[in-house]
Image (cartoon, rainbow over all chains, first blue to last red; front, top):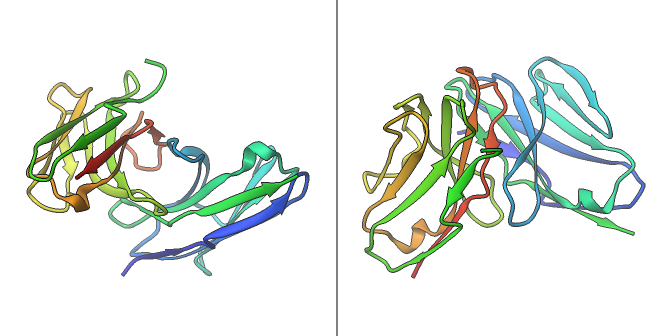
Length: 109
Length: 115
């Protein structure tokens, strides 16, 4: 079967750095997405990785290792508004997005 | 419009009833996706349209679910004989290209509650 694993919940302090991990086992791989979802709102796009390595975009960076079936999202200089769920999703061989259950990130002052 | 819109935002219905959920994609976006999301879970793929045709409907759970996009813009997800297990947030997303790697822009969702 297809599987995306993420921690259920993480807590971090305002101004700090947090790394959210995602491991996947899917039938084929055509890229990995990270989305942010505030409670009761729609997911919004953060990043897309298809090649190994680190992609940096402002305070957010995303890393991919295809050989390890592993990705992480790195959030720097955390702000209270970063409190949200972070969803990892993999595009499989049929070009369907397979989603993880999301990691709820709680930011404390 | 500026973004993807979905109506209604909330729908409460009784078991066995028929419901229609509407999605208005971003103007010019040819690709449209329907997902459903249960509490504490990621979205679950239902169906994908490219233009007017359903290019992939393999995620529809059974024949009570059907979706149309007759003019290649607005889409309607139809659920017959609703069951309590159909309760979820139904999300619609659109993207501009023909490739699935294009960013999907999500609407706010319709929260369906089946009593």
